[in-house]
Length: 425
Image (tube, rainbow, N blue to C red; front, side, top):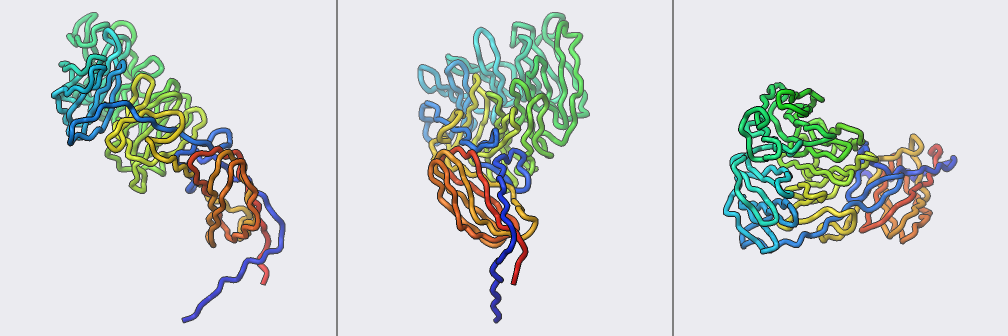
């Protein structure tokens, strides 16, 4: 057996200082962030999640989704059973849904949420859950009417001012038959004062002003097959996930994280609040994550965790994780866990060939661990609050990847000093 020893890297040349971009919003070439967001060329801690004050469910029940209206909650369990939590405590509705319900927020003598599995429906208000006759797979409340779809191709609308009267007639309710060339209706969203119809293979806009005879639908875009429950809108941007990646329609920017999501999804849900779009999906590595995207910067990052039943509620975003209900917050710990935040750069080739990493200069608030990997080895250093210049690293390689691990921090700058030159024997 012969053993070979790699020739030590000896270089004659000059030094090159490289500023390592902290923005991985485009997710290119391996750059990725977990629970760290990038804006203005800096890294800082991302969202957190605080627990909701919910009553304990009966033994054997596991929470899968939380819906909220006027201080009351509807709790959907793995068994399909629906519970309500009001000021009077936990109530069993006696209803078992066949699947995760679709929901629509409406105003009928006060704010309410209507929930349906396509065959039956419940309305949630501060008094609890009550059965209603209307059943739907997608719905939206707009222009003082309730709009819903039941079979995937027909759009029904109620009488103005009466959300539960769908009797057809002049000045009353009615229906619109939509052509099937874009597939079934998956979701309805009120955006920019119009109703947008999310179809299997595209997006349409419904203009519903004035007399119901003048209601009209026009095509907006066509695309690959859409995951309908992923669609959600901020004030400026409508987002959705399709088999070919994340899409946006409107003024906001889209983080190109398509490569991080699997093309085969089974449980995808989206929600939006405060200029951010949230997406629960599975990555190409079969890991369940919560994606967080900022419409202003185009930045995006991932939070590991199987966050189920993601939905909007009175300006809040709610979800269930490991049988407990949570609300997304602007920062802090996520769901009572230590915030393990990770950022990784795209591979850096500083000199176009073999080089030697001599030092790192980090400026940060909060302690962190900085790891550098190359095709020939790795180095790890502990960086205290305030930052540090780490010298004498002497890591050879051609391609270098930088990774930050922290509980909470803000990184303002990261640069590396390389020695470049030609190998000498």
